[in-house]
Image (cartoon, rainbow, N blue to C red; front, side, top):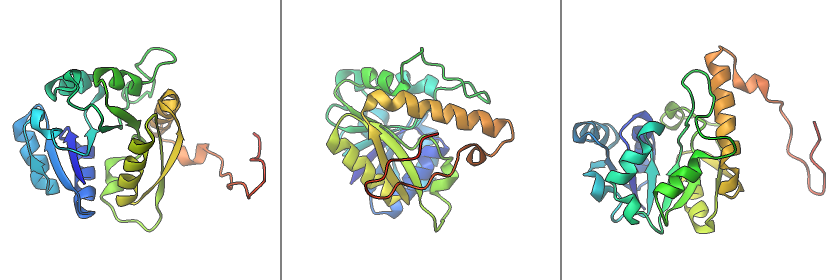
Length: 217
């Protein structure tokens, strides 16, 4: 599969590395051509200029700091529908650093903002909870990657890409649930910066057996 990556940071490089290992063709680009070359060399991807990254891509990853999302999508031609019909993976956490409070308006998901900036793209919220090292460090226990989106085919494609890097996709619903996933990220970030293991704040609830009702809190 051909995957275009908008961004050159640690998550972009880690996911590019993992997907290349799985046999995908990766193009990577950012606002700095120099940083794109560095990320490409580190991951094995091809560095391309921003307008070209998504031209022939089957899926696109948006991987920049939330304040730079509008600029990079504009540089990639998204407002002119360059991403129309393509799965657009959004792992953005629009939160205050170290605090975890969402910077989006109440009741609104950042993923919905991304969808407005990239008309026609099939936005899938995913890959926003785990640090980049999770996708570059081999482990025997796969992690669950919660995701949501409105297009079934886009969810199927992103789910396949999640499996390729050792994750297990779990679709929670449409993009209207993205706010819920983003709040979880804020919760995890706040606990982590407070020196608390977020895993200790979440009860271990076994999955219900067939025909059983999940336990209520």
